[in-house]
Length: 259
Image (cartoon, helix red, strand yellow):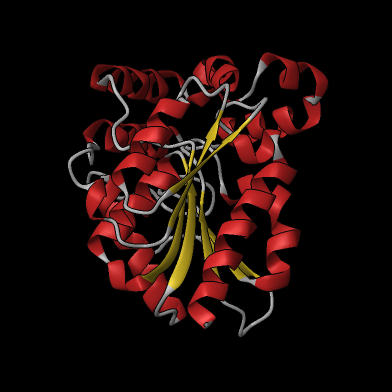
């Protein structure tokens, strides 16, 4: 399937793919874009039924999303990339590392999990969205995306994220809910070989730091960074700290490989 995408940054720089969460578009990464585009050719894409990407005819799985990323890399003629994914995007990063390890330089897994239950909850959410649209769940989702303090003190980015969520096509959102319901890589993530950084939000109730600790403990050599005072969309709530952690991982490992 052809994903909608955008590339920013100078040609010839190392490619960095950014994968967004369920219910957001490639605009999720706007807080990081200007900084990252100084040193990387930044590729952002939308999940099926989100933003610029069409709805997939066949059922969506995390593995099929990873295969879509490989197809995109082939289209762009990028042999190897670094990859940063948040929530569903992080699951796609894990699947990519397991299915196409040769395409991956470095990996950053943000506010994500090897398994995110209960399964029934995802199917229930998919049913609500198919019947009533994403606006029906917007308040609950925003309550998990951001801390109460951030929602009160920073209404503009919260409103922007609400707009992204309510603009997602119901079938696209629901299909990705069902992909998360099928996802369980707890017994597989130990095979990931790419140098990995795991980022968790200290106040994230959707994918709490225990999920990040499991990933960091399962992936050989992985580092864990827990960002204080933020919930699920850590790159929006703590943009400076998030970008610092991301760049630190990418640059440290790039320097190591250059030696």
